[in-house]
Length: 291
Image (tube, rainbow, N blue to C red; front, side, top):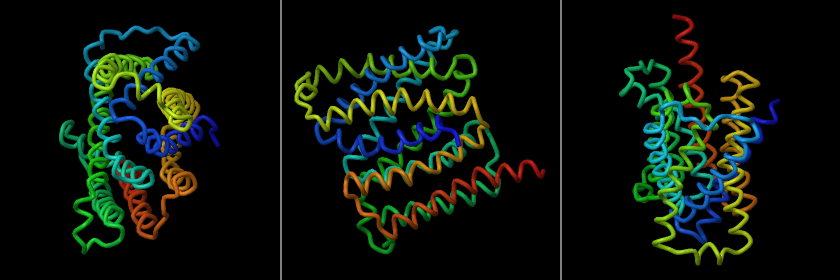
């Protein structure tokens, strides 16, 4: 077992719980600004500790665009989480690999294959069960705004993943992430201060302060570092399997810390979503090898 990979996934899983808590005191823009400032400062310290160069290797323009995409992604997710649970968010975001496969097929002309098509069908069923709370026949779930907004953030993550693929071939992931977060932070922090000032930050209670620090330092900086270290010490396939733990940990944390209910529809929808991702990623790989 890789301690680095487990710690990264553990931090990411509990990020949804911390976001729910922090949104009780800050707006999505205020929260993102604080996360970016804390994350960039921590990543800068890690980069210096590791002895990496801060050079962008001619990728400055692309990194700036990526920073904008990162901001939009975090803003959409935080906005959606104002109207949905941490558990639902974790399960919905587990479909991100399928969105990446779809976008790659559209933009990079990569073939989907039967396994990914099957995965999309199964994931769709899982999301419907999850969002409808087990009653797809009712119409109330169609107006479940938070869930649909969170689902749309899977698309922004797919755009980010595909767009930054070439960047990380030339720039170390830690360095590229630092610049994306730092540049986005330089844009969003003045907006936050001009629209809201510093009062909300100064009035944060202990729970809110701990949540913000955890999100900026732990989930945005340390988790990414741990993930990079873990991937370097194991195969990509092994690392990917650890991501399956994330929604389970988030659901357990949501039940313990936020008293979110663990319902049969949540479990069934989650199992279908994870099964869809497994089918899409692993059976598609087997199919390529057999060919």
